[in-house]
Length: 113
Length: 114
Image (cartoon, rainbow over all chains, first blue to last red; front, top):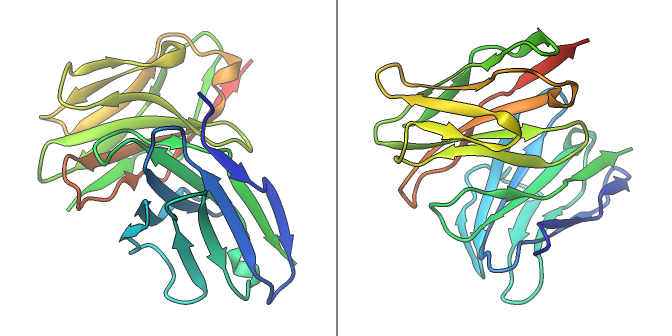
């Protein structure tokens, strides 16, 4: 059973470009969570999605950030018009349900130049 | 409301000596508690979880944690540290309610001295 997959592992974008991060949950998992980790800081919750639904996006910045989890395909975290402050590691996790532990992917390290 | 506090941002122990990473939580309801480990440039790996069954929980790599409701604590321990245990450890709290987020502690970085 493959774990949570994230790609790309490393992404470099210039200021103003768009960053698109993908997350494929573990087989059988229909719940996906996105987190951001800044250097020397803990994980900050961003958004919680189920298939075709955003359940909780209270951790998402109000502008430039969006997330989706379509019926088919991976979950996507999209950051428009990136700025230097968006440089961070972005982790995706999945679980089979709300009450279960989360399994994490290896992360995508975004660098904005 | 829920919160979790990891009391030490850094802990250093010598190889072969016991490890204690402290975590206190606050929750209005019966919590579910987890410990995750993150090695450098890696994702998070679940070490162990407490979900209202046995209060002493055994995890992977020789780690265990004890849920103490009276002290609102869920400290992580290991009898004998190994060099490979050097990593960042996160204590996590949630509860059995679909409206609750998972709350991560700020993390404790464990250093193992040779």
